[in-house]
Length: 482
Image (cartoon, rainbow, N blue to C red):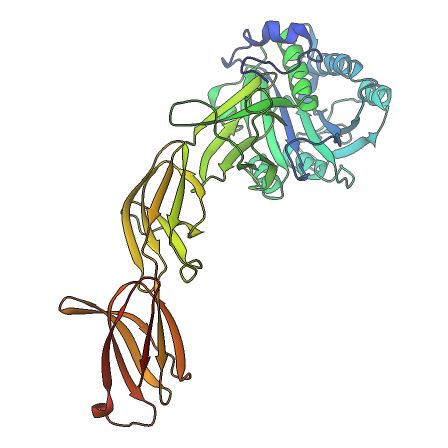
């Protein structure tokens, strides 16, 4: 798919895109519509899945007493009823879609200041083809009670029957803020921690800044200045709930070209920290990064499992577009070579230059793709071989050759205690302790001069300590018998 390819928009009404740019964010004065969509994503093992999930939308409808107030051409409840019913008409017959309706504030009136903060009820449960039932139920509702937003959201999370392959979405329509002791923000955080991702859209008319601030911890605010803008915003939210969008991950080489590939890429939901999508990055038959489908209602953290790994802490998907996310991932190959059979099992520790942190461990005589840059290598030979400032360049293989080791065969008359040290001028550098249990021992050592210090277990005085110097040559065996 080419870079300028857009996601299929045929399912999204054209009039929505014509009015998006006209939706303002300026505060108004009288009415608020808060729409909260949150989704549960069971990981399916890949970015693309032919097993299309069932989308379930739960409408949580405000029928509190304040919905009787006038707004624009009619009362708030009348306008909300009419526009929601019109949006529901467009959902009739949609495949892989089920709807439900929860209402609050419609059962118990406020009398002498007393309010029932448990006044919330699932009026229509999830099942196919229930749009007419939801529409008729909305028509029968009489606003009279209070606004228990937090309690309604808390109970709404349990309105979805268990499902292994479902997208669970809540759309809450309300004209006011929390009127009980509940905390919608706390409920939001709790739902996120459980893996239920709360993605809010606040659509309001007549909100001052203090009022808007109460929703900052819950989501984003849109200003519905009139009935038409509310209609369009509602349709846009429903369209986002129903339609995934596309994403292309460009792994850029050092020349700025999206040619790096064949590494695992994972997308984690920022709020729940759960894995949402995982795939092996691929260049398609045209040489372009392949396209995956993501839900735009989540914010993601992207991890690319190069060596060392790289990440983007926040990836937000713009609905209705073909999104492109680019990250620098230039790579070359690194190989540490050693001749002979004796050194083939050594490991190489990869660190950033002058950094103490281990980035990767690879085996000698094997090529690994790593990010371009300068590294310090530590080869786990005896003694350890330190190789500083190794540069890896784009599309090149950096080869580091280390000497072939030799073999030191030690034969002891009786087991004992001691160590092997390397002679470096006037200094002795400890290399390894010898085994205190075995009489015959074998050590694979790098070429150089060494000293053995040994005392038998049966000898109880230091004067019986024995010292012997020996040399190791590449590919050769050195024998020492005591």
